[in-house]
Image (cartoon, rainbow, N blue to C red; front, side, top):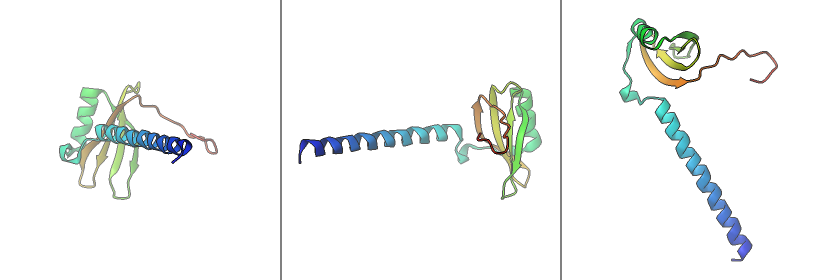
Length: 114
């Protein structure tokens, strides 16, 4: 094997290692931002809303209906410093599925990229 071929293989190994590291880091970030299902606690929606409002000063800023019939809601502070995503199933039980910082509302204008 000549020197050029060895360098090409070595460069390929470095690229593979960098991609593998990026995947591991991304998986860790996703895992940290989405609590494990076993750790999720379900509570009536009114109770979850009361806690988010009273303890975290968050209110609903966005919502949507999933195909499953679940309601997906984003709660955030008025200044967007932190936010919570809640899923409420048709039986009325809500679960916190993600929390984060720096919420920004985005207005999409037709024909323009977001």
